[in-house]
Image 1: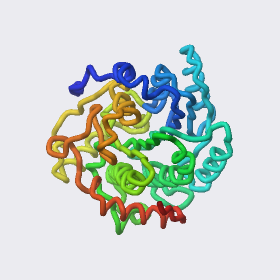
Image 2: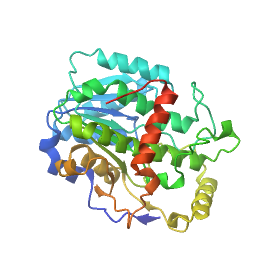
Image 3: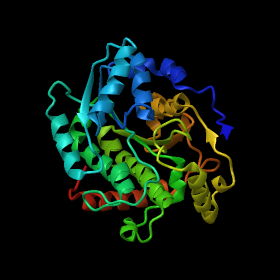
Length: 328
């Protein structure tokens, strides 16, 4: 495995540059279990002295471990835990109601949707949707929109959706997003579809809420990071080959290339960039990697994941699937 070329661009250095942008912000992050990129992100940004951190996830014990890790650094930043099971729309609605009841959290400046699953065996969510689409996209879509009132109360609201260059593995499967309830399932295609959805959601949010309400929305690829918990269920002696088979069948260069791995800090540097860099204000809706705007001429940026028509189609489909319209 090759080392990523941006070895110097670690989160600590980005924090130094953006400390004044982080200070006094209220930041909500999903997917912050110990060992995750979300946990690395929230631990690092405490150095910028945000006003408040909200850690959201489905396991209270894991949330508390991350909160304890923050406290152990000597940080004085207030931390609150929010139980959030993104795989269940009913649970998402309950979490949104709870968050909206917190009068001492008048607004949310930055929402980072970092939770996700990758290349899991076929399963349906309690609502009947393929689990990767349900957890990685539909849960975040519903949660983000349900708490939008608090986001819009911020003076400079941002929403960051963590995607992946794995979006290359599939566009939205409009006629078969549920993989015929498993009959046509490929776990890498399903992962790709969900990561494409993350990017398209940012495109839609930027278009719908950027001009009118000053909302900035971005998606990003943090890089290939082998030390997180995301792929611990996989047997890489087998699953690397199944991934390469999908890439080669699609003609993707990744089918023949070595992984370019990053450390968690290098991956989280792009999180920090997306969440706080003021230079991105004129580039609403873009997809980032290596702490910069990805270049579709030289980077893996599939047009199906950035097309505004695809984005609007997904928005309408997502509204249908969650059973609620969100008009802005």
